[in-house]
Amino acid sequence: MHQGEAPSVIARVLGVCRTSLYRWRAAERAGPKGLASRPHPGPRPRLSPQQLKRLEALLREGAKAHGWRTELWTAARVAELIERHFRVHFHPEHVRKILKRRLNWTSQKPQRRAKERDEVAIAH
Image (cartoon, rainbow, N blue to C red; front, side):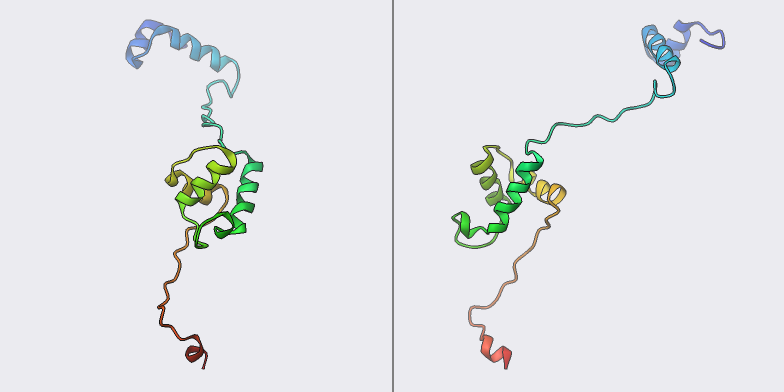
């Protein structure tokens, strides 16, 4: 358009409609940020920062304090805990992402110990 080409020719070459060309030209004239790409912010998190702090406090109390027989936190257990306390449903796989990305918790595999293990003999 600046070089004398007809807008319809430029639009056909780019595979867009003429109105897009005029919109882009107006954005260019608006300033350096007119045509800059802006990332999509994504969906709003369903758990607020305050709820995440509360969740972390609940997790630190231990699984037994919330009715499970062992202290092992699984993604399914954490999902159930979130639903109980915050009334928000998450799939267990998404709970793993929340724990890792937002709370910086990592998955830990408990060590298995033999039931016959003799701690006294080991210490000796």
